[in-house]
Every structure is written in structure tokens, then in C-alpha cells.
Length: 211
Image 1: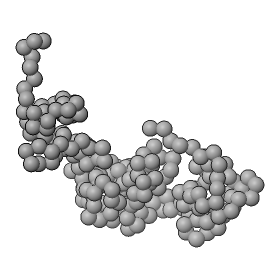
Image 2 (image 1 turned 90 degrees about the vertical axis):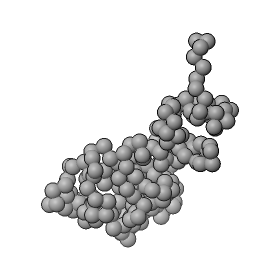
Image 3 (image 1 turned 180 degrees about the vertical axis):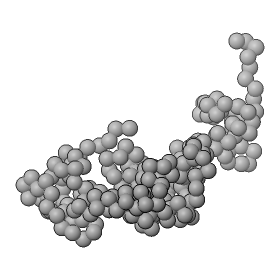
Image 4 (image 1 turned 135 degrees about the horizontal axis):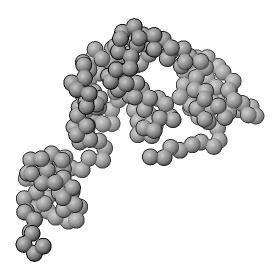
């Protein structure tokens, strides 16, 4: 997925924690989310070099120290937590357009130096290294009550582009129907998209006599 790169800066633009409040030549006057005002070189905003007044680096340093102290830094679950933060708050993360740009956020209590431990306490240990953190409501935020551990297959069935089929009075993801009737999900989706009635797509055995 390509990432859109801004070529100009206008008042009101946000760059992670900085919001542009004024422009003066090649520099921008910015307000940081922590309340600090900062004068920033315009191209440092555009290329992602400057993303806060300095509080972001300080917070990351504290997070690193906290991570080393609690012993989870560098582990799979800590990487999952970091990735969750990155795709919601860092515009230059490749997944940002599908998360932060959509307005998806992470609960405040799960961010910051102690955020990881509170996140882990809520979701519990990872069942396996294959599991991923999944939002139950795909349009909701990463917050208590809306996250769970899920396998990649379970996670994929909860995406916005999941293909659903209604048949026999039930609506299920194509992958679930495929598992239930023993047919390839790709064959099933092909049939429905090409005009087959849902019940026929699920039950008709391919005719191989003329092959």
C-alpha cells in the first residue's frame, strides 16, 4: 500500500503530536498535545523528523526503561503492543491509513510508560506466538472490552472487507461457510459473485464428467 506524502503544510495540519498554528517562511509554529509551543522547520514535519516538542522522545525513553524493568521489552507481546500504538499514532507507519487515519485510537491507559503493563493485564498473556490483538468491533478503538487475542484466520474474518453470505436463514463469513460445507472459500466466493444462488453455491457438487 502506498503512503500519501504531503507536499505542503497548512494551518491546522497535524503531524503526530504537533498541530500547525501558523506558518512563517520555511518554519511552522506548532502546538504540541502536551501544551508546549514549538517553532519547527517545515520539512522536518513533512519527512517525519519532528513529531513532538520533544516529549515523544522523552516518553519513549521512559517506556524503554519501564520495558527493561518489567522484563517484557523485545518480547512478542511487547512488539504487538508497540505495533498497535504505531499504526494508530504514527502517520509514517505503513498501516496508519487503515487505523490512525480512520480515527482508530488506543485507550489512554494503554499508552505511555505504564501502558504496556495495563494492556497486558487486561488482555492476558498471548495464547501463542501466532495470535494477534483483534478489535471485536472493527470500527471501534483499541480499548477495554473491545479487544481479544485471535488467530490470523479469526482476525481476517473480522475485517471490513470480509465477504458474508446469507443462506438457509443464516448470515456467516464465506470462510465459515466454506469450513462448514467442505468447499474452498475461493470457489464459494467466485460462485456467489457470478450470480449463483447462495444455497446452490454451498451445496452443488462441481460437474467434472466433461473435463
